[in-house]
Image (tube, rainbow over all chains, first blue to last red; front, side, top):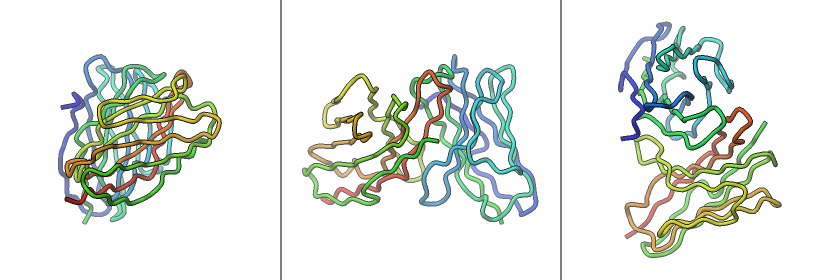
Length: 113
Length: 113
């Protein structure tokens, strides 16, 4: 158990809908990362937050947004969903914005039908 | 930005043999290089990491080497076992620079009994 908690574990929704994925980082970790992994694909970096502020942005679509709350949990919002958004979405956390190891949660499986 | 390449994409070895996976990175400022193992449908888990002030690090059957001049690093697994079968991801990151992990595309390792 990495200590990073993600909910829901599985989610099936229809095209055009909106979903929210939730992540609680490890206790004491201030930095949260979101990654997308499509079937048999690599880990695509979406976005990073540190202590409530956006720190780095990767290949995140405009239909997607995220935020980190004062209690340090983070949410990834995916809207106007398309079939191609079906993927495993990982949250990861690390102690600082500067680095150290990042630890992944179990992921949220999103299926868009 | 940083770009990480990883080879080979697939690797099959006989149980007991060694496996080597190589990664190259583009940003000479990168200074932290972790390796993650991901079993099917599960989260990536850190197996070993190395920082740029070290040329080699070993942990039991796993070792990582780093060549800063050539900007490449390698994962070495000796005496492979069936449970080593998984997808392995390398990553490059710049600690103390608003860290943003960039992952390689992954190597699917199969250890044949």
